[in-house]
Image (tube, rainbow, N blue to C red; front, side, top):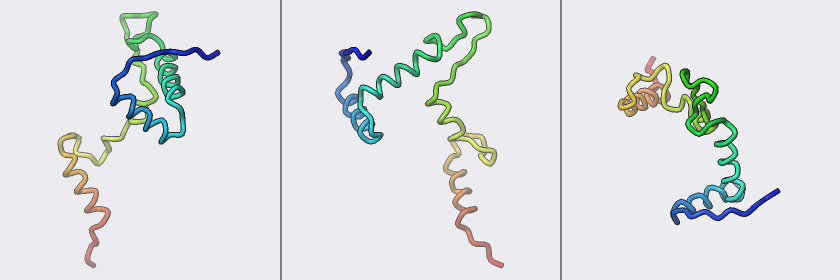
Length: 100
């Protein structure tokens, strides 16, 4: 059963959300419903295991899981500040033609 909900949000946030929803062929209502559902289906708000507060269990949201591994790799120097050097090395490997 659907029910109406009135929200007060920043105008720019609404505009960006509408653009995102349109780009992904969905409605703003479905987008918000999905987000709220994903927030509330994973347990307590703080991400801790409610049964045992001495050993916290970190809950990873689907968004964070989808971004996992985006920034680092085995070939990376390990320092996120060296991304330009890492990218330059990648381009050299990809496009540099070795003379025989």
